[in-house]
Image (cartoon, rainbow, N blue to C red):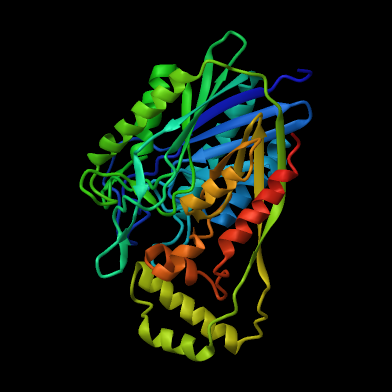
Amino acid sequence: MENKLLMGVGRADVTPPVGGRLFGYRPDHFSESVNDSLTATAFYFEQGEIKALMVTVCVCLLDTALADRLRLLIEERHDISRSSILICATHTHSGPDTIYMPGWGCIDKEYYDSVFEPAVLKAVEKAIDSKQPVTVGVGTGESRLGINRRQLNVDNSVGLGQCEWAPYNPQMTVVSFKNEADEVVANIIHYGCHGTCAGLNVEISRDWSGVMTDALEEASGAITAFFNGPEGDVGPRLSNGQTVADLSYIYEIGGIGAKDALSIFYSITDYKDVTLATTMAELKIPYDKRISYEDALAGCEQYSHDSINKDKQMAVYFTKVKESYEADFQEKEADYVEQVIIRLGELAFTGFPYELFSEIGMRINKAVPDLQVLSLSNTNGSKGYFPTQDQLCRGGYEVTMFKYNGVQCLRDDADYHLMRETLRNIDTLKR
């Protein structure tokens, strides 16, 4: 090929000081120790005039405004267009607060300013400085470390647990990079699953994905990082039958992931020269109309701002809708969301600022015969859960969070529009 693909990888520590809020369960929950350090890992790609960057950070979610800020800073400092940058959260529930969510807590600004942002920028610099010609190997296989977590109970309610017959994507992908000396220099593992093994613990941790990546890193001798796929309805397949447990369970599930990732890695025999391409386009997702003013008032009466988690989110939602009727609010036709896609050969890393349900990612991949689409949840920000249309009638935690996430809710068929818009964007990628 005329232009070899150049790749560099860099890592920095983003572990917060002990005593800070652990994000993912309660706003009054704080760390007491460090079980395993959190990291930011950056992969820099360059081919001719094209530059691209993928960063994975070991936090639960990254606020959209903060992700936008990071992409702009990287663009200004390193001449990498923000339209070619993916910043992804691994979704560990045992990390610091880097997003504002009513009922869950506020951004730890001191941590973000003094630890997180400088470390991410340092990882990016290291990646750019270490660039070298590489070839790419891809392996795929199945892993049963995840399971659909929307447990359908006998009374027809949906809770957080395990549902054996509901969809989840068992496909795990390992992407490996070799230099001209035939040495493995970096690996990416892609899979979709919540990082909730440790439950309401007090230890800072990457959760199960840290155990998995450490195993492949040790075996290959190369920096290895995890990029989370559609995980909105997928939890770890814990032996306690739940979707949360305690810290010891990160080794149970992480061990399963490690075995599967190692098996897939060792199956890779062909490392190729590949072509790099990027695109950024909007996703147009149609809005539904607001609920009525009367319904908003009733909701304000029902939910208290003194509550936490989902109930606090409901209180904020009904208040915002009420205030929208009392102000000069103009209903919008649709939400417009930036989507960045980076193609490496036959792989298309496709970003979504949502916790996608697994079926959405599988439908997209099925519709693109010439590319393997690796959908990335919680990427370039966070805009909440994104369920499939068939699950809206069942309700449950994720559906509630989707329906009460803004003054206007997205339409019931939003998953179809998301898929259609994504397929259109993928079609613009140079093959």
